[in-house]
Length: 492
Image (tube, rainbow, N blue to C red):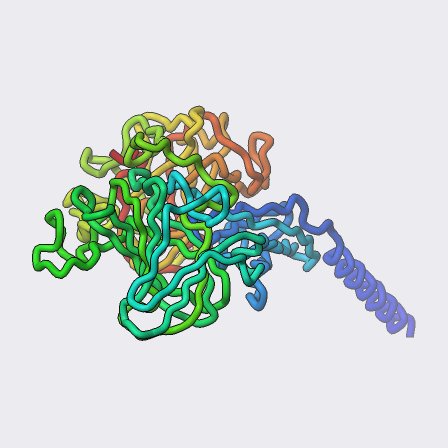
């Protein structure tokens, strides 16, 4: 009997110990220092945005884009997620939920702010039909009539009380439209060749904008661009003349040495524009036009009349790699976790890398979720300059996230903290990727902190790093063949 009681007491004691141990497992602090590195991969909507969350004490993250109806995405540490954000009147707010091993969650909200519209006001005198933006005259043709009226629909992309141009089309001709003679020319010498305007329609229709010299286009070829209006009332349309084609002349040789409809990039002055509403169709209706050549919020200053701008602003690139890695000088790379590398001849001379030169081939077997490759530079990279962008040409036929880590070697980062930047590749073959280390975060270390900078904390490197290490789709088991070239080079 005594032995039975002692056994029962022992079982109760052990049970209490186990319960107490379970309670200890549930204790601990929730994740802290939740941050998100938000990178815009392009400058116009729809925006491809890569979000890379970090936090102290987290082993997973749940990321919500803030886009209505978009589900949350669960990712691990050192992983990124990319969302496609539409154009909107207000900014979106992404939510990052950092999850600890004990399931405690810390949530932070981050504003997703799109890059400023790099608009150049290429119309030296924008046309607004108000006192500050007169045209010389307007005209309709083939059954279209024009008149200046007060804005009949203060909404959408044109909510202001202002004068607009009304276009009434009777549908009697299949190339009817209207034209506007401006008081001074549109100057297409700038790198931005986008003509912005607001147009009103209550139906979906194609529009063609043509720019001309008057009266006979003797020095600049007529150029045209087509867009679709969705029919939602006032919309801002952007006609990009860097992808223009030559307008119709009817001559087999075209004009000025450029045949009809051949793509070309205009660079000169144009004093007249014409618009065709649903060209080639007999369409009747009433439409409105306003703010031709106007930049949102003013944009860049217009070029002075009679003075030419430089055709293209130079890329403010600093060659922070003293000796860029071109794979033509015997540079050696290493792979790890199932990655093999070798130098080969460029298998796809196109896109951002049209040269038939040497490139690095990376074959990834997909057996590890943090496999990658790297090299050791002969001279360290100095991040002390204002430009901290590492440029590289990267080839992929699939959309992937590429992460570049800059490390010291072989001193194990004893004087400079390892840094990392992630960029999305669009999967279109050769693309130039730009890793901006002004937006870098601290790379992963097992102890969570090195040189006083915690893992994942944003910071700007200023010192010297001589080992670039790449991870393709970090945190995922991705197999495939990829290529890189011109690491640390500036465009010519």
